[in-house]
Image 1: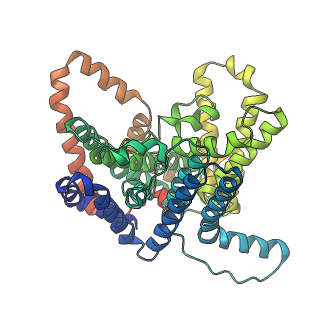
Image 2: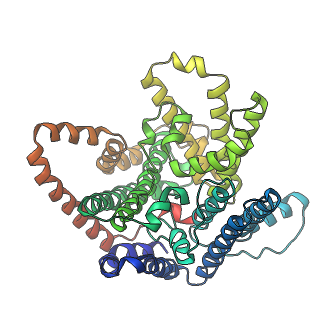
Image 3: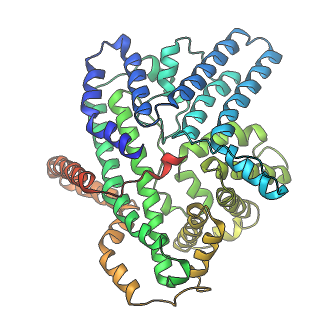
Amino acid sequence: MVFSSLTFMYVFLPLVMTIYYAAPKRIRNLVLLIEGMIFYAWGEPVYIIVVMASTVMDYLYGRLMDKYKGSKKTMKALIVISIVSNLGILAVFKYSSFIIDSVNGIFRLNIPNPHIPLPVGVSFHTFQSMSYTIDMYFGNIAVQRNLVSFCTYVTLFPQMVAGPIVRYSEVEHDINKRVINFHTLDEGVRLFIKGLAKKVLLANNIGAVWSTIQATQASNLTVVQSWFGILCFTFQIYFDFSGYSDMAIGLGKMLGFTFPQNFNYPYLAKSITEFWRRWHITLGMWFRYYLYIPLGGNRCSKVKQIRNLLIVWALTGLWHGASWNFMLWGLYFGVIIILEKFVLRRFLDKIPGVIRLIVTFFLVVCGWVFFEFDNLSKGFAYFGAMFGVKSAGAINSETIYQIYTNAIIFVVCAIFATDLPAKALSKISEKATKAVHILTPVAQVGALLASTTFLVDASYNPFLYFRF
């Protein structure tokens, strides 16, 4: 699916766009729907049936809610059925094996595990579709009566399999009436190239370094090598996911849609709370609007607030994957956020910003170990190597050589993970506007050509978030 998606979005993109622009405005939603179905079926031909079935299901729930909006009992019944139906799809396709294995392990049973293959991006398009019925229940949006238009919303191919998670209310106007002009096209192309370069030139190259270190037994790693490895993964996952998000948002602009921002330099955060306001923003907002606030949010006792935060972060972890490491990863951040909110708030305000930034980055990097190792024993063994409990010493010649040969890509990733390049470009633009207008397109063409070259030659090209 990874190669297929890049092939569709990159190689066949000119054809897709040409057909879309050539189509009369009245049938462009239909064209997008067909293109979205082809895009998904390109790598998941069987599961397009599941996607379309759940989409039509939520469309019908929306129509029924509109019809019976005067009846509170009927509305409650419909929203419960809608949520249960959508979560049921996730339970069957994403969590059934996890649940069966856990039950077998705890109660020493031998329930057969069907090992149902995971549909690509099932968490993304399920949450996206659910936002429509929940907003219908709360009366935040108008019903979408056109089935094609609603299906277009769920199957928008730029962000269908890896986000950002777009709530219906955010594109309600664009679905029904959108405008495409030179400005939106220009902005979309720039964002797409930026995302492609982040993914292909940065994420893939730094990810290859991590792949080599990860494959090494933890006890054979030095302390420095293990830290270098997890830092490489820290940059890989950021450039991989934010790169795809930029590509999706850029394609959306080119199609006339404005998708929400999904990343805002998260590694510049000075607290874990701030980190999650900058990382995967659309997922955080989804849980805030549809789970945290309905549970009571901050408008309740301290005990209930803690309960709400633990529920949200446990489910945030499970959203990422059906494995105990993701649950632990979510709760890890949940506990830290609770400490920041209720215990350390006054203390943190007195600490210099640079210290808070370093501590936050350290905690985030440690969290990525939980995230990356679905085998908890391997994850804790890697922690052992990081902190010198069971390692091959502090440093050796192999570690020095590995860092030396990958120093350039590492430093480049470290720089571009911050807003320094953007600030520098802004200052240069103020003093040399004409030069920037000339050089920027040249740089973009260069990035596009370089990305193309790497795509042709690369054998390592994963999209990390496609598995969610």
